[in-house]
Image 1: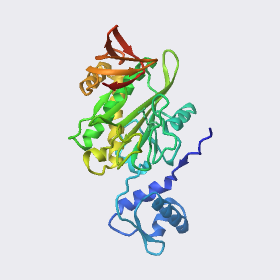
Image 2: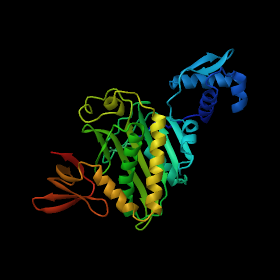
Image 3: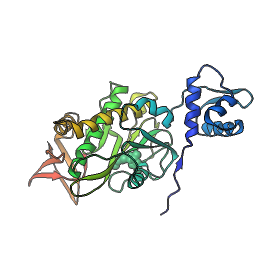
Image 4: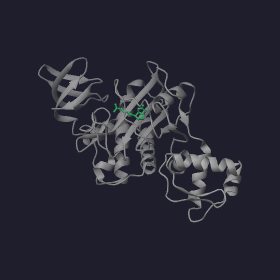
Length: 332
Ligand code: BTN
């Protein structure tokens, strides 16, 4: 099936928002904005209308000039870039609508997108999860983010990097609200109050001995107030848990910074691999001593026994110990 073309955000929108934020207390004339972004006043008016359609609250009109009424929470490159200056994430792309940020990131990586390219969307029309699952991607409610990495690592380390991404999400959430204590469910779910608020989909292109490129896609339910019927009992959002609205810009910046730390440690610091496995198990109620049902080429049940040195989950069953390679786990 052909998907609708991705709708990339005009980078001039971010520059206008930045300019208005830098002059938050005054009305900025259309002429000044036009000069700054190298266009005419009527084009500025058109761009302001576009910002309004994205939910940015801008007061004013061409004759009076423009002023932001509230700080917008759009994941625009111009808003994020200053917050993640010291990281590998230096190529930020924003879409107001996309099929899947992971698909776009994989295609871009195949065409040579540099390490540290980030693909963010306000809305996904074909968000993908592990297996054949969809990822519910309501407009401007969540963080839908995929990053391209080109680690000098064997493909067998991709799982550990993916587990590290879970730790990075956990750290980012706690940086914004230290009262929350997300539970990691192997391999890539994050739960609060037993319900999922984040999923991670790591995909790669590799030779037998080396990764060519890898895409880590993170979906976080941030400000969702409700979910479709089929997800209601399984999913939650940071807003539902904390009873307050979250800044997606701050959360994404915190995520990229903690992902940068985990990633640079893993590729460059002795002992980082072991540290990731240890910390994952520490923050996962599923890693050890949990009775689980596993769906993997048929189903089986057992009690979890920790992660093996490669990051795979070990489960003790009636017929001996088994290694879970890619299954879906459910507590029983
Ligand atoms: C899962 O829980 O199975 C993984 C969900 C991953 C969803 C994210 S949203 C951003 C990125 N783009 C996608 O299509 N999927 C990932």
